[in-house]
Image (cartoon, rainbow, N blue to C red; front, side, top):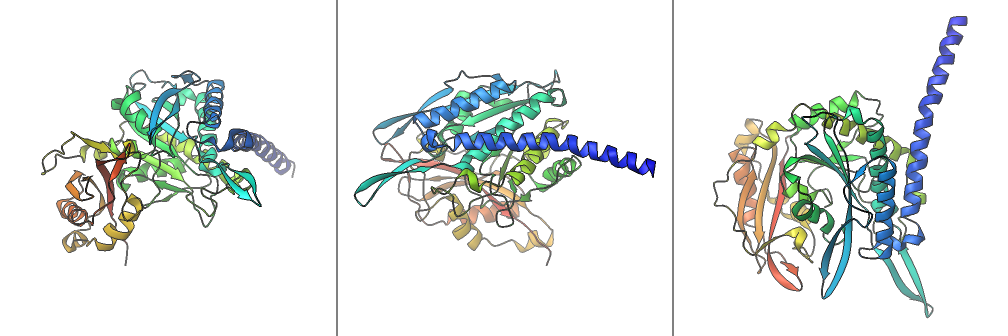
Length: 435
């Protein structure tokens, strides 16, 4: 009996000790979200004082956590043209250098956007009333995770052979301008970025909005990472999302052919409304998600070689190289191309997956995977220069090219009010299910 009591005593002490970091994490996440979604920041609209306050808060938090800052408090400044107006925004960037002398020059980027929609004024009985889009889930929740992940990595930096770069992106609501600027203009070490983790809308995870992970990496390479992560003290595991996931700051990395891992709990009824407030955040679930993403990041950082098969899958297309003169990335457009007044997700749902025919020969041979297809939306909305940039098998490649090539016309992208030729890269999933 004495031995049983002693054992029970040690279990109680261990539970108490493990609860303390959990409670601290929960308090920290809540504190970050309450500040970022407070009335003082006025919805953090791109180019406003509120967005700048969010950027400064993130800078101070990362620096306090021991992150080496690669920008000053004003951030990595860039300008967006919206009609005839110039809008200034910024990215906040810091690094925790890897502990391995050989691997520290390889980077894993962890990013989250800190801007939102700002305010809206309407008349009520002749009186102007200002509504604030607080954006607690979109995306104060992702920024809160980013901050706490930086604290965890800093406290265990010797367990991370590769360097971890933490980025807060501005202007996501303006065509992901901040992440595009980081990838294409600002960060000189893009050639050494081996993976990108994106955190966007993680605060409402429940049965209706499960914790999800989107990646273009094949299951053959992703499953071992998930299995290794599950051996750590995690209590949840994300469901695998398909290409119908909403666009976010992973897209410029995706277009640069960098393996991306997008964690989210997805859209809900309060998305982009004034009801997206801190009181609706499910903080216990957010804690579990944060712990999972941390261990997933730890597993990534400790892989001997990252994504050999993924990198080898990019083959030279049978089509001629796409002309670059006068062609813009979708993220460069003031107005992205639209498919029947909607986005690329709608194109995949209503056209590609509706008319895609899984080749019978591929079914019989059990061939499946993600084909990445690149194409141009011309100024007249027509689809041209369709080609495979990441292959699975010629059977699947040819079918993906076929269905995109016969697409109806799009609404072309615009920059400064002018129509432009726009390049888009999309994943087309071929997935076999039992039965």
